[in-house]
Each structure stands twice: as C-alpha cells, then as structure tokens.
Length: 535
Image 1 (cartoon, rainbow, N blue to C red):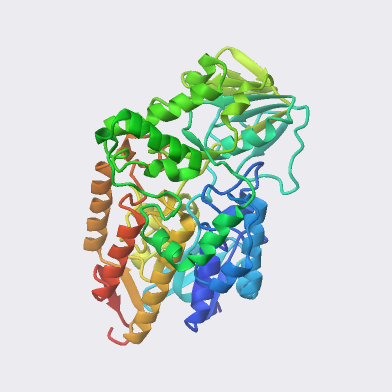
Image 2: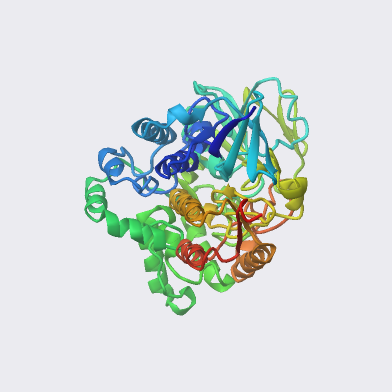
C-alpha cells in the first residue's frame, strides 16, 4: 500500500523548502522527495568554479520570516554558491524540515487517480506515495542540456560539466583547458579559473552581453538600510517588474532622451552594477532604436577593456537585442581576454568535433588536458519532462506540451487536477528574482488549498478556456517586446527539436501578482473546483 499524505513536493530547493513549511502551517501531512543527498536545489548542483547569484544577496533570500532575515548575515554583495548552500541548510535546520525530506530519491512518475482525486507518486526506489496535492518544485534551470557535440564521449583527458561539478572541486593549475560555451555558467567559470590554468581556450558560438557585478564584501550601510526599511523594501520587490529593488525602473524613454543625458544615466547604472542598467529606460526592450542605444553603450565598454580590437569585436553580440537573453553578471570577465594564456576560438560558422586529444574546429585541432562543457539547461520544462506525469484519462503532460507548454498563470494545467507548478511556464520565473516569484507562487498555492478546505472542495484545475486565453496573452505580451527576436533558452532554442515557444511571462512581477490575486478574489476564476461529495 502506498503511503498516504496530504501533499507530496518534488524538489528541496528554495521552492520545496518553503512549500513544506507552508504545508505544515496549514496542518497538512507532507513530504519532499529530493534526488540529491542534501537540500539546495540549484545551489546544490551548480557548484562550478565562480558560481554565484546574480541578484544582491539580501534580495535573493526568503522574506516570510523576519526573524530568519534578522539572524542571517551575508558576507558578500552577491553570495557565492557555498554561502547560498549554507543559507538553505540553515533554513532546513531552523524550521526542522529535514525530517520530512526523502533524500537520494528520484521521482519517476506521478499519476492522477480520477476516482479518488489523488496523485500516486512513484520513485526510483519503488516507493509509492498517495497524496491529495502534488507540487512540482523542480526548478527552472535544473535539467542539464544533453551534450550534442559530435565525439563528446571520445576525449581521453579529464571531462567536466558545469551542471554536475565534482563536489571536491578541481585543480586546473598549469593545465591546458578548453571550455565550450559562453553563457552565464561559462562566464563565471572562465573568470574564476583563468588566472590558474596553463592555457585556456574558450569556444564561443554566440557571445553574451555581460554587465559588471562590482561584487565585494557586504556593504554595512546597504545592510543597515535594508534592515531598517525591510517591509518597504520587500513590498517594492514584490511590485518591481523583475522583483529586484536594486534595479529601479525608470519611466523615461531612451529615444526621447538627449544622447549626453542618456549616456550619463547609463554610466550611473553601470557604476551601480548588476541588473540596474536594464531599468534605465522604459523602452529598451520595446523598440530596436531604444535597444541599440543600450547595446552600443555596453559594446563600447567591452572595447574599452579588451586590448585586442579583433577579439573585442568578436565578444560583442550582434545577432540579438540586448536583454533578450538574461544578462550575465560578471566580475572581470572581459579582462580575462587580456591574459596571454587565454585564447578565444570563434566557432560561430565552424564545425566543432570533440576528439580523443581535444577539440577540432574547422581544420584546426586544439589539444587539452581538461575539457569543460558549459552548455546550459533544458530550461523550464526539462525537469518536468523527465517525470512521467499523467492526468485525467492517462494524458501525459509531455504529450499535452508536445507543441509547447500550456498552463494557466504558470500555476496549473487543464486536465491535471491538484497538480501545482512552482514558477512554471507562463509565469515571470526566470525573468525575475526567483525567490520573490517562488514565494508568491507558494503563498498563492497555500491560500488556494486553504480556500478549498473552507469550501469543502477537494480538487481544482485550470479550465481549458482559461489556459488557452493565458497562453495567448503571454504570447501577445511577448510579441510586444524584443524577446522573441533572440534564439534563447527562453524559447527553447538551445535544445534541438524543442518547440519554439516563449515560456516565461514578460508582463512583470507586479502585474502578474495582481492577475493571480484577482483570479483568487473572484472565486478562482479560470479554475474548475469540484468535490468528491458532489460527484
């Protein structure tokens, strides 16, 4: 017989830990199933050199407990992976969450029993859990993209992947290293290892826009301001378009601002660091003319740092508007290319093959001691597609999403009652401060379950009409922006064969929150609520 619970939660990262805490507060019996041997989610698995958050530490943290916030002290402006993992372990211990987490256990299937209105979740160990509610807290960037480079298995040296880095770390001192990829993980890895390697060859197909973090020890004045104005700051984060207070958004238009004034504003934002520059003007993501002003400014910053003009030009993206792929936030990335032991290999128009000795690009073969793959993730849907999720009439979620993911508000899917997605496709998720979006989703799900109990309902699901309308709305909003012009992982373009659909909701965190709250206030408009007793 399967174990019977009120809720099963898949994943023990930021989402899963908070969902378990809220479930207990509702008086629900719940457990978390986690593949790793510890908590952390993204920050458990992503331990590659230089891994750190791209949102200021005090903002990238839970807001639900003032006591937790008061007792934890961040050491850096942008916390590195080890500190983030310590934080999440502290949360797990402080709220006594581990006793309801099954570690080293991978969920293989989740099947809805229509007669019982319950989900049966099966694990690779053969465990079976029956639960009224199933919450997928699997993360948006947790399923590594498959390595699809010819010959990838043939290299005889040391092979590493940024998505599955050895816990003990790697010593690259004096070694010949090659790295394939120039996305966020690669940028951080490159910056960290470049001073230590014998030589480093960076294989770049598409350059990334990267902005400086200006990282350093946590500023006591900034910490004091944040704590003294905690409630106002947290509320501002919930209303901010991307959930980041530091990225103050302006109503000014770049195209209506004189060039000298515009550049002064960009300089101020650049000096502030991080995502601040993205909020300088309201139209940079709306029109190419405005976008070009920001792209040109950042390009000039690259040219000012990289001494070799030919290399500098190769490092400047030209095939997509700035901001249509998530900014990389770096600490000295472009300076790396001034090192004599670093070589940029442009593979934009070249064939690439991994060989037993290294990497062959075009007619040139490069020999290495170590090879690093930094190819990113099957974003937003990858982790869910690894689980056999079946709703009404045995419908598989991967079949329903065969032409692209379809949800209502990124929270629920028609035909899959009581299955909740945390920061799923159709929600701001990866276009935002993930912790702000996670808390909003978990709070909404918790309030929804409480409302079901008050109304003596035991099942809720999105209606087909609401789902269809939401998908159309997400696409309509996306098409008002420049986002669709990039071959980004936002549209699944990095995974061969994946349907090209813009997955996150680009309307902003604050507006999205209002839409979710409005649906709940109207009796969960767009959702069908049922009870076993009525049937």
